[in-house]
Length: 341
Image 1 (cartoon, rainbow, N blue to C red):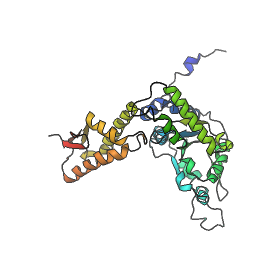
Image 2 (tube, rainbow, N blue to C red):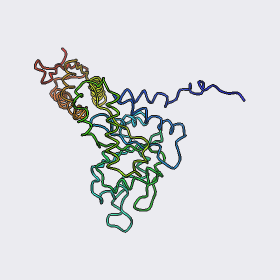
Image 3 (cartoon, helix red, strand yellow):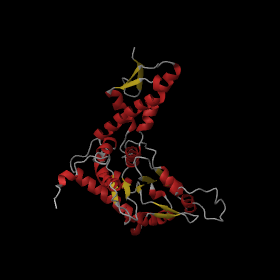
Image 4 (cartoon, rainbow, N blue to C red):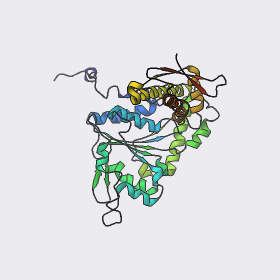
């Protein structure tokens, strides 16, 4: 029998071979998260995912604005071509025990049975797949806010990949990756980092700081959830605070996204924008912070770029094909937009 060298077995390129690179370009500053998630996606794409359980279950921890939800959106874009191709459950809407019934629907005979459609039906899971990939992404956002009955409901899903609805129908989660995001331990993490963290990336003791954050996160998780629930999670991933370089890259990405939005929406009426370094520094200062990371950046760009541009388009100050320059004012407190003559 001829032995095939391992090197020749892995040369054939495939859609999964550059998935890590694709994700790394769009999820900034969290390489440890991506390297843990991608192998589970590859198992599904290769047809080698375990039977009788979800493809993967991940609990994403860390301070707000570090990219937890963004990771799931980018993965949906890479697999299905759209960030919206995922099923998102906002756990803040299920803080009361009776509200959890909305996930599975009311049993037959109960008031509102026909009117209450379950949020986690097989149809909805299949609806977030695509012709390119049969993997469903399900996000339970801020899981710590949910009533305890939700975590009990999820035990069977995380273990056997089966959910029983109110009408006794079953939903299979075998072709699903489940993401749970949480801010558990975030305040303690901020206190741990506050002496050293500003807008500068942690250099000295960076590895030790990461380990301390992971320890804080795991301790918070164990205090909140039962051992049975924690043991069904494949990986608990702690996202690290973003440094100056990562935040600057995110600003660049958001400006590129705005330009693409202008092209997509206006088409033959589109124009170009040029945001110089001073204006980018303004957006970085106004849209990012130690407490909220990059969470406020989209709103800052909306307020200081998108809305003023929209006003100029509406008034006829910008015509198709124009170049609009954005620069920071002399005092650095606002942006000035000018059309190139």
